[in-house]
Every structure is written in structure tokens, then in C-alpha cells.
Image 1 (cartoon, rainbow, N blue to C red):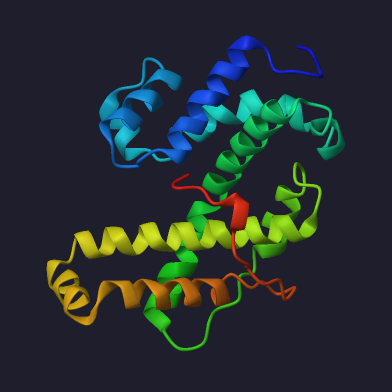
Image 2: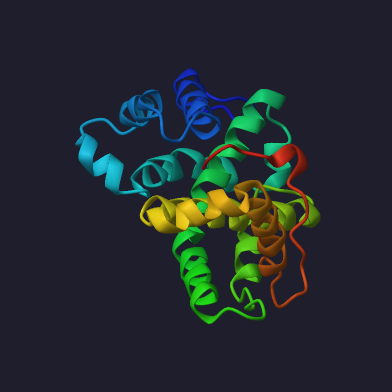
Length: 205
């Protein structure tokens, strides 16, 4: 494996992953692409196991991370972007269980925002590929916002009466408040603040 470029097979794999990440998360086309990257896995298994693709992506991206962020900078721009996106995909799914547990505790407790006590660990992990700490903090904040949105989309879809109330109140205003609340909740013990994701926006991980 050349240290200065991706192999054709790796590039094809990571390009497909990029299409999955930026594509419609509810589409049949996305499901087909996931199945292409995880051959021989039953479709119902892929539908119910959210981490199966991440477990396939991890070993493909890990060799590129062993030499650190500086080594990634030597890759061509497009290759570097593909590797970083793959790493973010794996990292996001690694912390989904912790983020979900935090969301559930906050939803049950209400009141003041809970401390994100795994923020430092997650940001250290992100720094393996992201040179600037500020960007790592922003990415972690986006992870939380993204997962929170999916969590409550799932809740609303299972609770038609709540969905009706949201329609009456104005779902746009609710989503704005949800976005602001998620930014506050993504602050860890270290006082990091989840900023606007800016260029790091992803439609779905």
C-alpha cells in the first residue's frame, strides 16, 4: 500500500461510503450501497444493526491513521477527504451508544443540561486525524446534534399523538429549539462548546 495515495480498491470503497454518508439515509439506494460494502450479510441484518458497516470500514481506514494526522496531509486532497470521512463515520458509531444514553437520561430528567463526561475521550479520538482541536470539538458537537435529531425522529414516528402536537405547534420552531439545546448539551467537562458544523456538515452518518 502506497503511503502517498489510496489504492484503486480503497478509493472505490471510500467513494461508495461517501455516497452513503451524504445520501438519503432512508432510501433503498443507500441500502443497496451498504450491502455492496458488506457482502454476504442478510439485508434484514443490515437494517437492524447500525454498526455493521462501521466494523467493516474500521479496518480499511485504520492503517492510514497509524502514522497520525501529519501523514494524512501527504495524501492527495481527495484521498485525504475520503479517509477523514471514513474515520469520522467509524468514530461517530463508536460513540452512538453513549450519546443515546445521555439523550435518554436528559429526556427523562429534564431541567439543566447533563455533563457530557465522555467528551474529552471522543475529542482525543478525533484528534487522531484532525489536526486542529477546534475542528475536533465542532465535529463532536455535530455528532451529538445529528444523533439527537435521529433519536427524536424515531420517537416521533412511534408516537403519532406527539407528531400531531408538533404539527400544531409548528415543527420548524421545535427543531430550532432542539438545535440550540443540543449545542448546549454537547459541552463537556472541559468547557468545550459545540459550534456550527460549517463545512463539516453531513446529511447522515
